[in-house]
Length: 366
Image (cartoon, rainbow, N blue to C red; front, side):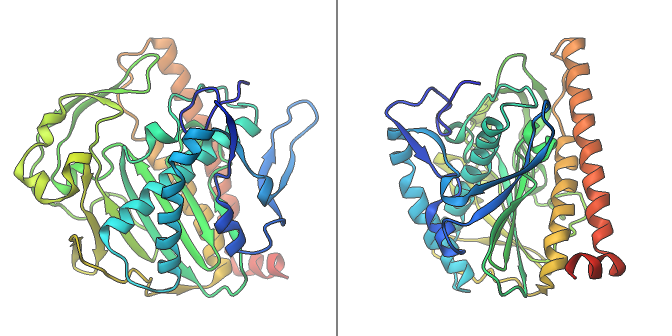
């Protein structure tokens, strides 16, 4: 498998190494030289086995210029994440930067693990960090546990569903659990923004062909018509930069969209905080606390997030655009692969759900 820069997707120039999970975060959560469990080695000849790495060695190829260009994002994200875990207030621009960073980490893990696994799912990545970051609607759920041990972990990244489409994962930073979701038009329709009347997957392309409806210019709750099992602070942001769709993006040049945008020129919608009575739109200059009100048992949260992220992946992968412009063989191939991903996720869901039973919990923790 060819080596590619995790930022631009091309062969690395003046090759450097990118720690997709950054050094500052590794150091803030324990010994940087500690070994970490990173899923399963998919060795079809000699058998599957646990994969462990020294955290500081978990890096992937990158162009020197690409790496330098994204270094400012790391500095900004570090400041925001530190503020959140210190229970300090943050503003909408800061949260938008943090969501960019989550895009970067999520896609970087997808590309990096694809290289480590020698592309066992046989896909050809059609995008990299730079072309995917900030393109699709996104959501972040922040939950908190009573855990006192430092830790850094991520969940949902070693599933076949994630290998096919990096839509959802969990990042665990000490006793904070961040469930990050990004998907095309995830909340656009119900936030009142333009949304697709039709959307087609195009053969041999990373772009979609979209026929956009101008939008209803009103908000409908809930923003996502799926029961939210997480108990924490939930933040949404619609995005419309148009980098991965073929359609008339001038439809976004309207007063309603401008009114509810953080940066209309860059295609960044406002940040919306889920509150008891609906949504709170975060305005520029405003700072709020996003500290979760509920504190979970750490073991229960650790296991339940493993269940929930698999459920999110299954649901998101069921929202595929139309495949009518693909050949019958291509359609059958995609349906078969996503069907397998859903089946394997369901096995993981059943397994982790069983660990939450009182009789199982005592055995595992003991």
